[in-house]
Length: 309
Length: 266
Image (cartoon, rainbow over all chains, first blue to last red; front, side):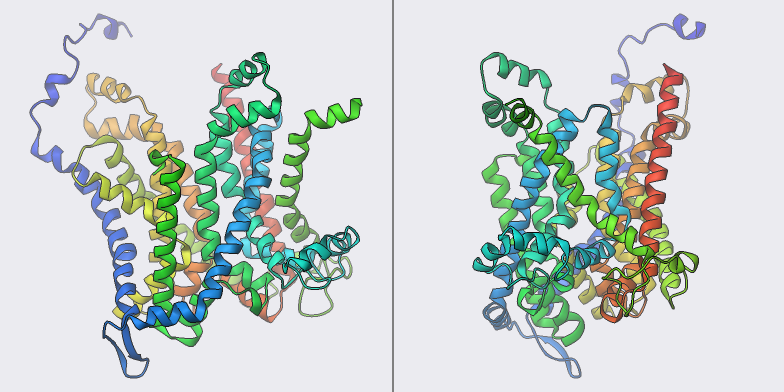
């Protein structure tokens, strides 16, 4: 330590040293980027181009496919599968709203009210991830089983009458109905809502709440005028992280739904892996990608948090 | 009156705990049903208590094989994604270079894309190249989608690092390599570890991208998916429960250790 204190302080720290840029040093970032970026270009960007090209090809599996600029595939795919597209938006949208309503209190609890239980609750939010999500989704088959306690309770409370009237359930069944799919989607993507919400809530200075109280704001007003606006970045990224994967999901619709609840992901999966109609599948996937990119851009613009990306 | 007041004050807590219950309910069901002795092929209805599945976790044909395939893929995908992602993260934080915006969006886009779109487009690439679908195509795909998450995790840590620490090392005559290994890397380690853990979890549990690009290779999620059609063995729940318990214990242990360390430092 003695030598350190005796050393004369540098007069102009490091600045003059950096002036002559060494040739070798200038290439360093490119070498660091090269392998990873190449990986993403070849296995993420290039496939998008291949997919776009596949979507305008015609032909058959036996004779091979050729690019014929057959844009009618898009029209055919849309006119045949628009119900599945609408369903995807509807289910994913409902799941996102439900995630926000359910997730906000939990994030708020962890951020402001949990005290010394905070870490434990955080672990409990993340821990389910370690059990394969397919196993956990299958568990909903047991929870929502016909004649089971959950369905029985909903029946006694006449909730199922309302949801049946809304077309979300059928009779006294929940499984194989839109409600089951939305419930599964909400469950699967809830942590993706809670975690960003928590991150942005945790950054809020609790003294702001006290200040609002001192200025005679009721708790509700404090929430509406202080807490919620300040948590907007979390709300925006949470809704995106929930909506995007939910809109492309086909696992919940397949395991918990029926043929009447098929989403666009289900169509892409069967077209690609079972029917082997590659052009239609590629076109559907391209439309889904474009729709989501447009929605995300508009949403981020309108909610005014562009620095998010 | 006091009860209503109490309810009003703690409404958020009650709602939050209910949501937590909703999140944990399926895990409870998975655990309980790992002790079930089902009548038919499907393990959805409670019959009677039994330890059979726990005594013989690999008793189902092909299940443990699929588990080992998943572990191998997750292991290599974690290494690949962590190395490549850490390099990108350092380049992004520490250097100026051209096309920074393009690099940033190339890293952001895979996280903002529905999995099914990436899965389908990657499959068109592999089909066009005539690649044999299997272990390697799954591994390639997993490294691809884990990469962005590693970059994000490491970047956050490196950004919060004090650059003066490295300058201090250099002032003390450490070469660039020594500075990196003895100063930079240890400070960045928690970020790299977080990224690696995330990559492992994402790869191990991935279904959609694997479903498209696996060919006839069966990973554990693919096995579960298949069994949802053919009949769900109780052993699936055993694996699910064991993974949950091990993970929670691991996290709790690491928390206790870091708590102790902090106390020692203080």
